[in-house]
Image (cartoon, rainbow, N blue to C red; front, top):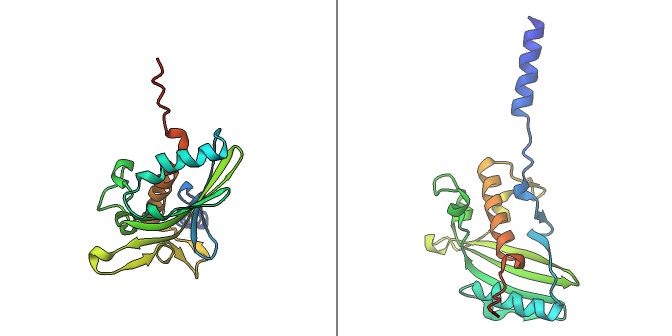
Length: 183
């Protein structure tokens, strides 16, 4: 009887005590605010990289991209009203976190070195103005324990995965096809 009871206790600890380690948080960190950051590879020279990035990435945003600033090896710009297409990633309105369903505003910083570039997205806010709630910081929703841990709630992890996929695809220049109609 003791062995059966011990077995049940061990099984319950194993099944309920699991922590969520998800690739959804792989590009996220908290450093005085929630930050998404990823490094990409590029074969373009720095000047050509910036013109390509401006033409193919920055120009795809509908509003707020007029205020970009380029320094020597850095580009910064604000994005307003960016929507995550969570339905194309398998999500639905009923099973996706609300913070994914509302437009986001954020600051993008692109740092370039030979052969690679790093995209940092910070100051991420949800625009809840259509609900008359104004702006809310994303870290208020997905962080817990005084911003020391990411939430392990399944719906939050899934939502952060959608945003991670959205940003990863949005800033990847390797997905852009060159137009070679020189035949």
